[in-house]
Length: 151
Image (cartoon, rainbow, N blue to C red; front, side, top):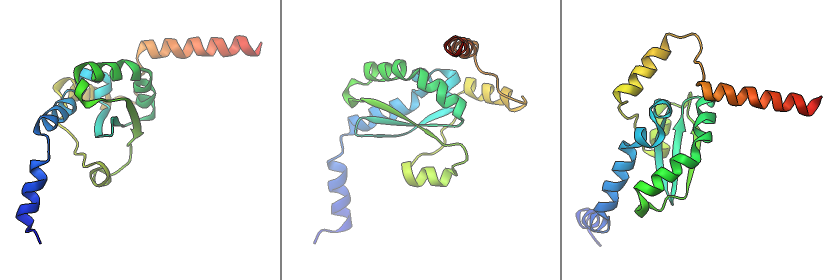
């Protein structure tokens, strides 16, 4: 029977340390990949079998990040081809205790970048977060399209 020490040593010998570095880089580059506005309201929770699981703090931001999914996925594939990422999955984590996220994903709330923290700070005093202008325009266009269809 092997001792615990031997089992741990064997485990670490089988780990590709270069892959670990790359995984660390993708987590730390989330702001660059998603953009400052989205990164302030989301974070990578886990990468599993080519799928990046992203936690999002509000349904409105989940909609915004979903609209940019193709661009974000393309950026990840371009910057980290060895990870063979094939999909992004978004999970609403608003109201989920951090302990639950840690149990499921081993996720710890990362330090926010200065820009992301400023955005969060400025929105905390607001009554209601305002969607970006391009989102408003898309909603208006959708509304007009629906009106035409029902006339």
